[in-house]
Image 1: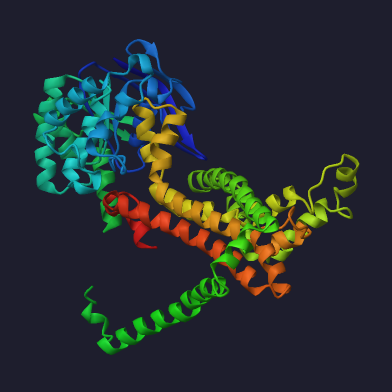
Image 2 (image 1 turned 180 degrees about the vertical axis):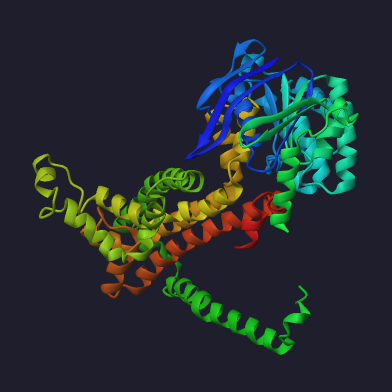
Length: 247
Length: 287
């Protein structure tokens, strides 16, 4: 269970998050939807501990996490650009979270190898452990980033625009695969997206952020069934205007 | 390598340009170096050996190595810290800091040396206090180290900063979420990320630290066997018309510089795979 209460964050004069209140059920698959500048990535970074909140609380699994350093939260974070370690092989990238553990909790070489091989199989990259990230395609890098995040056995998985940098076909495949993976592992997953169709097709629950506040929040099944009309209409309208402005 | 056709320069122009570049490099860079080595052995190898084993020459070699051994690690640490600040933080005075780091490149080395004489010399700001406490900086080894430190300060920072800036902080953040502590992030991610730029900066810094003449000349006092570095010793020999000994010493200094380049090339060759593919690829291609 993730409990977010009154979470507020500003950068200089701009208030990026303005009193967010959210409860996220364990095992759920949540999409944070919103135009750029709506604060969705900042919310994700606050959950991971990469930013410090100005006000408000974060509670994970019943324990206060607002000021917990990122390494102690056991949260897997997949960056939009993947942020793979370019000087390490795929194997070492995935093993990183195990190797940096304090000596007493660190698995031995054989255990690390087993774990990494298992994760490589899970993300369907068997036999590519010796490659460097630069030798992989975008979709493969995405899966390495995911395997690396899963290696620390996270309580929560956070994905920032996970499919943003991929072409359409790879994106569709990865979506389906990520959905199956979530069913299989049952890890609470929160992902950021600006694509409504993606959010609806992937998540159990869609939360729309607008100007740092929760603008709408509904189960994806009811949205798909068309039971809620006008959901996120403001956001859609806004999306339309920003699109028009971009055009 | 195939030229891009649309650019429209002919084969002839290309050949002329390449030829000119090779010619200039040969005449301006390679030939003088060859002259140094030829002159060094002109009077025969035994003479060269005597020139290099002379007590004053030995003292100069030791001093040069000592200065490099102090200056290079200090400027490596400083260069990394400065590069980190400038490329990852936004703060008032950041631009000023960038400019300040480059200052030693734009100031004449003689002036760099004079600064220390004016500060620490007998007539300088801190001179009387230092004399009262019996601390010698100018015309002693500390002065030489300080002057060399100043002159070679930009090398590491300049090499590392652009690469650090381009790579951003995301890998470090990823390492943090995976449970790495501050030092683990530094040694396992931040340092390896910039290792080639760092190595290159360190080698340049080392070459300059061993070869610096102007600034060191001002603060050294030219005391034979005590405060003469290799370049200063070479000048003294040259002024005494002891050409063979001067060139002998010069060839050793040149050899030390070439050896550092050799180390770099050997490392690049050994790690060519990761260099071509790693995050530094763009940086390496720009060399």
